[in-house]
Image (cartoon, rainbow, N blue to C red; front, side):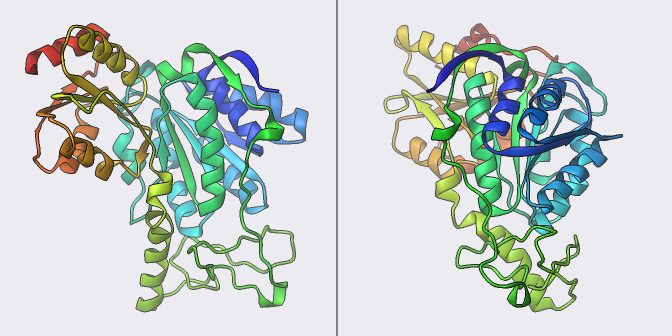
Length: 378
């Protein structure tokens, strides 16, 4: 039966991973994500899983990728500069098509920045942190409940599409405690990666099925599989053939893009008659939603839109809301210098005026702050 718990956001991420079938965590302690590793270190051995604290952030994700290649659902977690260090191997995982979940509990930056203070400054790093073209999938929880639920979803999506999936939480959501409902693990619908249906002598490691995702063998299962971060052909060997290069890169983009409508998630409220729309995500959406409801109680026609998947961004969905309503102004409060504002402005295509509101001092927007922004344009 489902049960109620009073958990911290970081614990909910760890327990969501375990309930999703995670059997390996490789990481390195870093504020404000360390509790994820602490819970994994305590809980994974109870179910026969493995936890390893490596010598640094790069080794942590490398160990997790090794576990995934060996057939396990695997996870790593980090914050701030640790996320920067993991980018090289995230790129490797995109190219080699290795499923992995990476939680980034955002803090102030750049560099060492503000280890104990909140930020949303990793939004664009999540999308473009590693070089080259790839399809990013990143979730942004705004509650402890979503930390749990979206981690389970992240594992399912990583396994289905054979690539890293990011959980872009933040210090406030990671450290706050709330009542949540935890599913009975036996009731969860979990996704496992496709396994080869042919004998080892017929196996072509990167020959994709109709969904553009190739079955994945585990090292040790008897299947021969060459693994590389170089652009490779269907057999996994490096190639300089232009047709094979184009085929590979297009496929790792297409395998996500063609299922975009199934991946993109968002939440909206009271936009049908709104003349002002507040767009926010993560911890900021909690203050924003309180502000929107308070303003509506005073007769102000304002609504709220919250992207749950930061990537792929809900651009088409947001544009349709603006088209189907009398919205004249969009306000974007975020804990950075306007990273998501640029994406929102692009999505709306000049259909209304977009206002950026930023905060970089390590504190959270108060509902009163956002109410004042709404009153400015009302």
